[in-house]
Length: 209
Image (cartoon, rainbow, N blue to C red; front, side, top):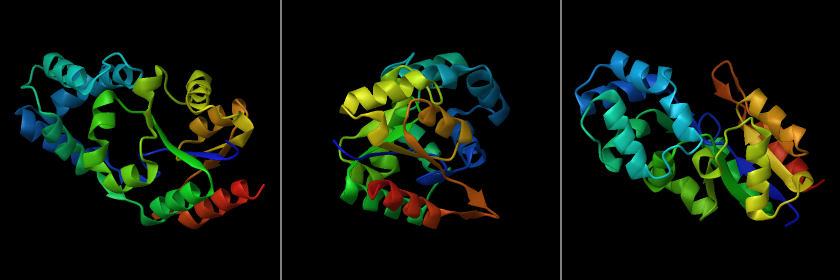
């Protein structure tokens, strides 16, 4: 495949605000925001989930309940809380759609198995554009900016690094992609405005190289 585009999810295709997610999780579980944030996120369980320690959504949700000592959420409940933290970035989704007309496209996001399973609920527009190309770090056993993740993603699609492009809000994730020979665009927000025109221009420039 000559041209392939990878797009991050949170803060690239969709704005993400964890502060809107945590209160909903606390209400659903009957726990406090502080307890959930400390027991799961601060103690490193989410990072472990993002590299695939719990390989399915059910395993993730079981572990979340066990570690936090709360009732076990359904995937739909868990997704409803996450959805509150997510807002579509119109220009980014438009850039993704344009990329899909120019080459192959895939999601490439640091996220656990529960997010992968919930993508049709959370981002149906993105799923429609990407079809089955929905890679998250838990499926690859590594997290960005680990170079191994990029190698595994490229191997998954049979794409050469020089033919691959990454759009990501993290400078370190972009640096990791460049280290393996990919082109990377650091997607940024300036004074509260996502720079989607620059993202679209980068997509066009890469396709025309």
